[in-house]
Amino acid sequence: ISAGILLAFTMTNTSVILIRQSSPSDKPYLLEKLMGCFHSLSLLTGFMLKSSLLAKSTAKLTHLLSVTFCLSNVFIGYKIQTQCQSKRSLMQWHSNEPNPSMYLAPFVPILPLCGSFVNLYLIAQLDRIGLMMIFCYVGSAIGFYFYNLQYGKKNTAHGHRNAPERMISLHEAKRSD
Picture 1 (cartoon, one colour):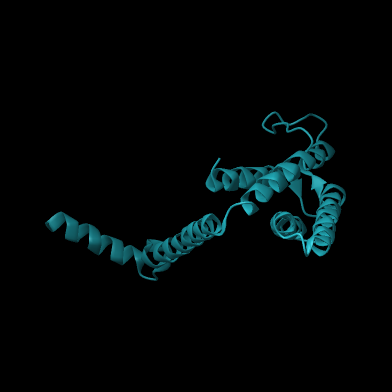
Picture 2 (tube, one colour; picture 1 turned 180 degrees about the vertical axis):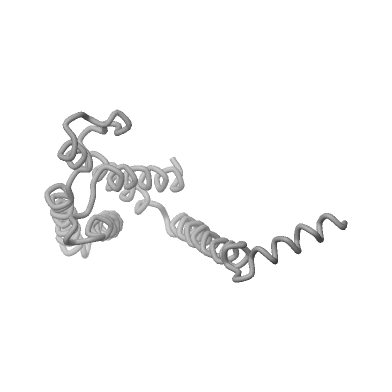
């Protein structure tokens, strides 16, 4: 299994949680912040477990850090479960009949969190070259996305004040060719 597949599975698990859960109205973006912390701690836990298996001299410290990170992940998962309400329960609260377009997913958010943890743990077990390649790949994909986002904003008709006149002149120029 490649790191790209594991990263895709992690994004899928995260998407299921973000679709099925919602942040409380008094704490906007709480769910997104908790998910970011969960993913960071999961990756750090994987690195700590990898280093504790390789180096026996500092094994006690890394085991303690690994256990601390794992317990922190359990606590974050508990906060997601208790503080971020399920959107299905919100939908049922507003209407008595269930929404047929809302699909069911079992054990949300526990099962997707466990899947994300395992995927990030496996990514952390890669050698340094593999990790550098996946981080470069993700970084270049993010950079490409934001470059194209700026390019689209700059070159769209909505981004110009005189957009109708510009579009008419472009259309006339194409006609004359």
